[in-house]
Amino acid sequence: MPEQITQYRGRLAPSPTGLFHLGHARTFWIASQRAAERDGVLILRNEDLDPQRSRSEFVEAMYEDLRWLGIEWSEGPDCGGPYAPYSQSERREFYLDAWRRLRDAGTIYPCTCSRKDVAQAAGAPNNDDDDEPIYPGTCRHRADASCFSTPAGVNWRFRVPDDEEIAFNDLHLGRRRYLAGRDFGDFLVWRRDDVPAYQLAVVVDDAAMRIIEVVRGADLLRSTARQILIYRSLSLEPPQYYHCDLVRDESGKRLAKRHDALSIRFLREGGWTPEQTRKAACLPAKPCLD
Image (cartoon, rainbow, N blue to C red; front, side):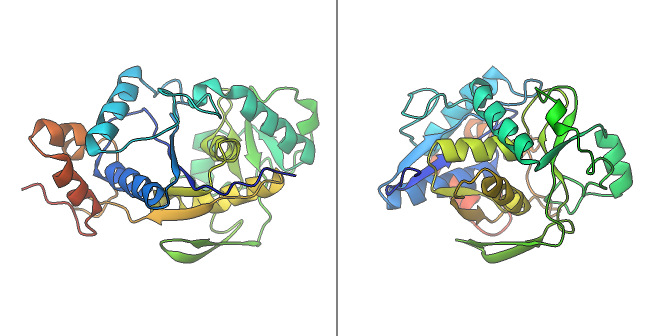
């Protein structure tokens, strides 16, 4: 029987692929406050899975910016904890174990389609906030998954149950419903360059680290529906979810790490205080930098 967790356990899960912006500040501050209000534990996880984009200088900036904002954590790569390691680049065996279980259950399949193939077949991504286009199903009837002893060399996709409604209660946005096969399609769990995909890694890590509430941006709502399917296939209980409103630029686009003028580092160097930055990040309106 799985261990029952009674204490609140939340997490910060940044990727060291660029500098934090105001959108990150909003999400991380809300996550820290929800943990503090519940006298809970806050975990910092370094999501450095992508070896081509992750940089050590961004890891150091991550620690600096979070502490400057006034955020503290009690488990993480810098301080250890009972569920170490807390950097995804050191957790490969956990992901391989989950891949084997999904392979043996028949819920994933090997796929040789390139990103270009999928993008051309799908036409366009689902929307501005979800950049994974719906997979056209080219390889979904393959039945040779059991022939692979390792995931390397091909993509691996999760076969979604078409037309099944995936619903969950978001603690901020309320009831959300997504139709598998229409709102999202068969999605990646392992990349052909032998890197676990986000959808698989985050499920494995949140379950292993006993996270009971995930606070993240509303751009990941469809990812939550995808991840609920992985939890179910691995016989795991999903956490609760709180999806924060997104901070957007003047054109209405959600902030990305390319928005250097709205990075926490830029604001710090411009003389902003942590209080000013938290206020700007948590306002529902567009940020004003005058």
